[in-house]
Length: 326
Image 1: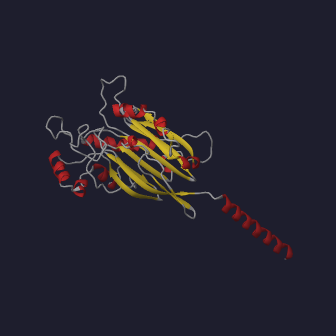
Image 2: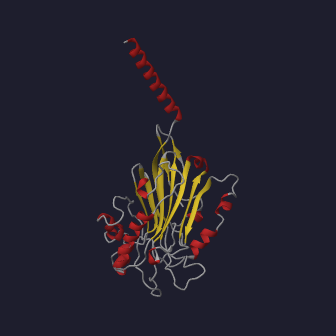
């Protein structure tokens, strides 16, 4: 997944860049879409790419270097949803209060083939939340309505439990900086032919007028108040495996209207999007997306606190002295 990359000094805060993963193998988005099969047994319909990624010994691969720059902070898989977070070794000591929450919104509203894996953490004194999701698939209007319902269910049922009463954030919106990523599965309300025509002309802004997700958050029905970068790249779904052609282009497979299914959204102040793009890894029928953010975090300074307390003590002593004289 996305990992902390560098730190820029500041008076009271630092900046964090949230870039591509430390390994090219981590480049794909956290969710690789596959339609669940009722015939699937051993793997419960999980895409083979997800199983392959989840089974890799990423730690061993990282340790092949003399001193790996990145270390794994947390990994959690729920059927076809996998969230793994790596951080720069020098930053690990500044990250605390790591907690995980999972929510299934699949069959009967709880099966984990669709849903969310979320991670809560504090970076210095600022709380971050990362939500990796796989929402309901399909091009029908009822599927679009179900995706909105998935989003609301994930917001409602994501809870980060704590053994202590330290005032840690419990719900998603209790955090100061929030990133939501994955296969959101929102489609384009446009025909296959017209979509392909606009793609060939690279008319992204025109194509975006038909994007379901943009329409939904503009109307306040999903992701109200969230932000996303400008989509200046081709739709990321659905491709023929290992090829640059969309499914149905050759007339052999069932047509699926191309769409920007894979998205990265943010919520909260103190974050600035630096880059938003897709990558060209071809091992899935999706093309992964990457977002780089600069995020402010609050840093506690013991020295400054001590100076402030010393100054306050001096003021109190002076006031006491004046009171005695009077």
